[in-house]
Length: 481
Image (cartoon, rainbow, N blue to C red):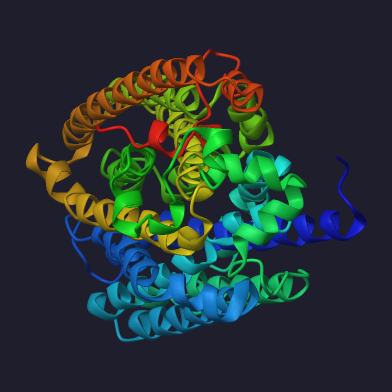
């Protein structure tokens, strides 16, 4: 199925809009710790700026996004995110003017709230394209971050000191962030959203698939003689869906992928400064790190379609291990930035595979109950960024616990190894879960005389022998962890 001109136009503007989101994210995440230091904050407080940012993302996802998108649609909701980003940028500038760390931290909460809404652009991309393009649309949108890997930070660097010295040295960060928020609002306005895309998600998916009978099998609504299943998905509750392993497992992968990547990123510019590197050198590392985060999006969607979300998580683990091992090899008396570059690049690539896989994985939860789509997305975002924010708060203290500098950097890297070990356990549990689904599917298919359902089980097998749960009966998916 080829994309129509309107669909191609929509995805281009969504990619550009998400590039603005990532540019803002790069500016705040890449510069906030240094900004805090520039107004007299300590190295222990510096990573808290990112903790505040991600807590803002968590709060807005929990309290606002799910009903806003349902009531007013994609465009209005995304514009609200742009407005919050503009307000946060203005408040951040005021904080620098007054040399107030508290105001700057508060501005990061608001900026995080704006980013929390804007990150939903990747879900919007799924709704403006046919379902067959679901995995690729997420990856294409994330790939928009490649455009922002260098542009945002380089512009901010160019205006560093343009508004004054001392506490105003980094005022350009917030000025440029404000401009990207305005540009994002323009690109969102140019996307032709279906006004009912969020509210009537189930109808939209049925039309896109062009197969009402297949959708009924997927959602468990077919007649008993077709499915051998007497469960009515209209009785499914949100709490029951949130307890399912297809929500819990990708949520854990998302939390750990973000934390393993963000904790080192929130302190490494401080660590590089402590061992003698310049801010310009650490900024270049940030730029390549962001490129590594979003560059793999060019082929991540294809990889997930071919090998599945669990295999994507396994690739993430491999990259996380390589990146952390390289970070541990960094030396204080070495003028080379190569270990810093390679370590952060591998962490960025690992995040892309882990987060992209988790994003596609969690969409399977509401395939059987589209009426809960926005609430499940909100729960996933809120919980991911809440736990991420809490963990990031500890980064500065972990770093300083071993004396800061290169010793503190290694101490944090050992902590990251512990998180990777937890991620390995989660992925092993996911593999076990897939095997349970396969066994249950085989038992069910052997008792069905109708060829229609039996073929759906066979079609559920992916290239690596795992099962796509979206085409299985509801009971086959609801397995205990």
